[in-house]
Image 1 (tube, rainbow, N blue to C red):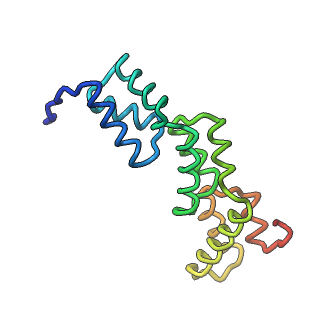
Image 2 (image 1 turned 45 degrees about the vertical axis):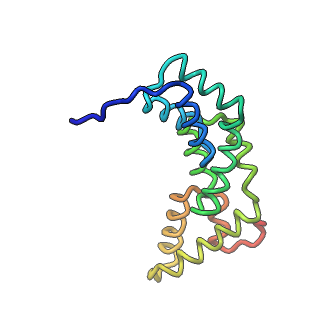
Length: 161
């Protein structure tokens, strides 16, 4: 397998490169660490660059978690469970995950579920209500929504607000 020859990069060049990388988009520590490793930066140098990025506020785990949660909910319409799982995979702390979940407004969350139910119901050709509702619920589970919120809305219980 052909490997691109790794060009030596100085710690200052790596720091500048990672600052641009973090300014472009909020990043988690895991992504930045992976990027540094791909640049051939290891050990104490890697840790020093990470510390510099954190100190200069280029890298902020809490800010990343909050913007990630907002973005995935608003753009991809993901539910809380899926967002939490994705953040855990990125090794985000439990504190930051809790903080990120507060970014999602409860009323907006439930309205999004209602809209997704309507959209999915319109796309289904199923006549049997039981099967239809199950398909809708499975769709919402895959998107990361909680069953204790989904089912009352599917059944049409209005006291869920």
